[in-house]
Length: 316
Image (cartoon, rainbow, N blue to C red):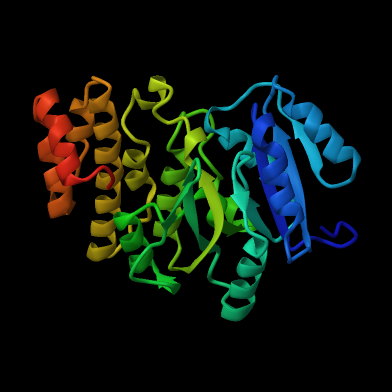
């Protein structure tokens, strides 16, 4: 990290009770090959010793440290607060219980320099999902490099190819877009934002190089059932998208929304929760055959639902 000049990247790290993982996350940032960046840690009122760890790193001059007294659902308010204090041209977000490779920022920098395209405000690197000692790649196909708006929406209709740790977004654009939704959603607000962003930008960039790991064990989506009470926030993103989407772009946007609604409904069904509103919110004209099969399992009795889930597949 080089604080004597204006940083190219500002890495925002929201922290809430992550003392057990915080050192690994920060060390992965300190080890970056590309060094012109700053780290902004925003503690959300931790009570597990995270704040004390952060204070130590702050005193060592390795991070800029700020604290919010009231935790915000999903860490969205903490990320927005960190972004508002950033000095870099580009924002990168790093969850406090995750990890990034030594070339994480270097890959973003190389693609930004290589493209020389000021219209691209969002760069995405591939990531891997880590559960214990098992690591599974989350690489989107078939597109890579510069993506048109249609291609970006198409990829998101296939999979969550954008993860919080794998995104690099222009700070000015992020601020003008309003940032992540604060105080609205407990989980899924990032998906809501990425969908809106993909629909707003005429071009983005995607690299299949894996430069970060998402620790699935700590995601907490279904560990706290209150996170699943409402429909997935993706449902609300369509009304916030620009009106100049082509038919194909709108189709892929709706297909992506369907994917998240069904995934949410599957999780709720497993826990005996009502899924009526989730099904009602689907866009029938944008349902793929695979999504239809998932929907069919949702109307089955619980015992048949569990059996059929193994046949249809566990993920969307």
